[in-house]
Length: 379
Image (cartoon, rainbow, N blue to C red; front, top):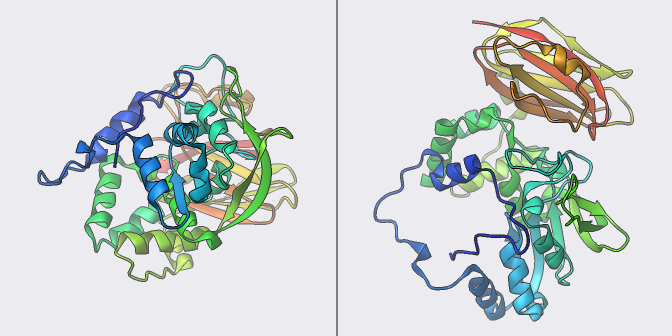
């Protein structure tokens, strides 16, 4: 392990303070005092990358789960490093789904960029142009593996190792399974170790470096570089692989139908004929519940966002909300559910004290299909 530089190759972008604080605090984990400090070595991240790649007896696999600053700098210092790289797997980018930029000052609203590309877009282009073979795992793929209540419940029953217990503690302390997050980095590592977890397409892309509403966007470009992109994922198999890995490699087979059926309440939303309709009551028990999205549109993927609003606020302002515009600060997004044409998807969550609202969009979100709510929570 080694420390990298604290600033991008160009620009001043950085992650929101809340994310940095959560990472620095290990999300509630207290580490044993006798753990050696692996950062006491004198190598920089660039030194370590060079030394590791150069000395490898066969081409190495590099997994980049953050901004590409250090890898780009290593390739700049020694362009021949790419000759001993089998594949660079990159968690980053977004193509047919919205980006995930939030909590940072912007010169204009950015609805297209993914955070790792946004932090250092120049470094991303350096890596893409390095000549190394590249596989990108974008938000299009990671959006298919939500970190939700279902995973949290499964993990509560599979804690055979310190690693599994640590992750469970982090999730318990942070309530991260209730915040609309996804398995961004774990999915990338899983794909790097088992290529069959995803299906791929080839795209010629560049990353927008100019300040403005698209900086950091992974953009299709005839003047870009060809990369392989993971677009669809075997989500259930990934989850079993991840749980098995956390628990020392023991085989974990999950009856997914049974697991999803244990959710206390299920709200079903059907998209058909350009409308989204709630099938079921507009009152559900507070606490754990699931949202099932059935997409009967034969052509367009669909996206359902479930939100709540602060007390004293009125949902009417959202009736005219258009995708890509900033949400009002009094709106909290709990998570999203996505379904391909003719498919269905379910996400489990937990809400205890306020009504929720469901907003349906086509995907990528270019048009709002409908707004459902309020759905009252029975306490």
